Every structure is written in C-alpha cells, then in structure tokens.
Amino acid sequence: MRLSFTTDQGNGALAAFGLIVLQADETLENEFRRIFVDPDVACYHARIPSHPQVTPATLSRMAADLPRTAGLLPAGVAFDAIAYACTSGATVIGQEAVAAAIHASHPDVPVTDPITAVMAACRALRASRLGFLTPYPPWNICAAAGCRKAVARGRSGCVATFLANRGAHCGSG
Image (cartoon, rainbow, N blue to C red; front, top):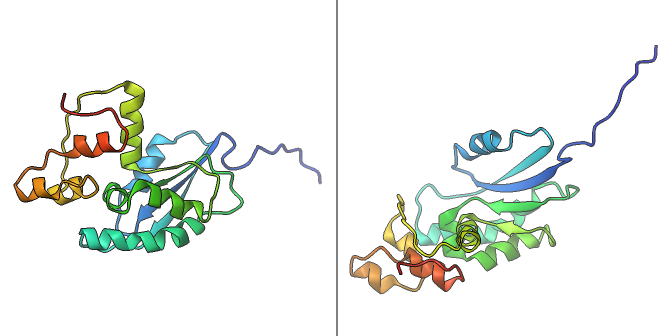
C-alpha cells in the first residue's frame, strides 16, 4: 500500500539556537520554550557543571568546562547563535573568554551571554541611563569592572561603570 506524504524542512528550519545551561538551573528551558513557540525554531541545550555555592572561584571553574560543554551541542546543526546562560559566570570569566571557549567547538557561530545582550540592547536603544535591580551580591556586579575598592567601601552601584568600560553607552549621567 502506498501512502502520500510530504516532508518539512526539518528541525530548526527558521532558526537554531544553542543554549549552555547551568547544571543547577531549574527554569531556563521552560522559559525558552515559552519564548520560542514557533515549531520551526529549534533550541538545543547542553548542561555545564556548576557548583551549588556561587563565588568568583566556583564561577571561574566553569571556564574549563565551557569548550567541552559547547561540544555537546550537535555538530551538524547550523546554529544562528549560541548563548552561555550565566550572567555571573560571563561576568567573572569575561565575555571574550566565553566566546573563545564556545568557538573551540562552533567556530563561526555568534556567541552571546546575558551581559553581552544587555550591552547590545543599550547600544541599540541608545540608552544612557539605567535602573538596575539585582539579587546578586556586590562582588558579582563589580567582578570584572575593576572596582573592588568600591565594594570594600560598601558601594555596589558600579554596574554602569562595568557596562561603560565594555563599550556600552550606559551610565549614571
């Protein structure tokens, strides 16, 4: 018996995204499923080992696991972008180091992370003033901004300095 059929363009016909998720994260895949509802948009996940206690030292350790974790994403997929979904980790490890680690497995794919996305949004929107609310401790906000002295003096409002130092036109003025 012959049945007629047609095939579609396959998984990710419109777009394909890779997402590196923390081992301890319990919400991100569900949140992304709600955002990418189009069946032609594929989102592939890989879990990176993460320590339950978040400190600069434990976040730094993820840098060594990033290349291997990115390598767990399917090699045959033409990714439109790959995201490292850890604001704290990207801040401590550094955006350039995160991108280089992911590029070890997926060389020509655009890479992003939460802090890179904020800076891109600031530039696109020409934002010059930001309100910032975070559950993170001051060391995390200031880790890559070179303002540990401000943290020691009890100031935690240096995220705008961090963004401005990284090329975003965001600040308090």
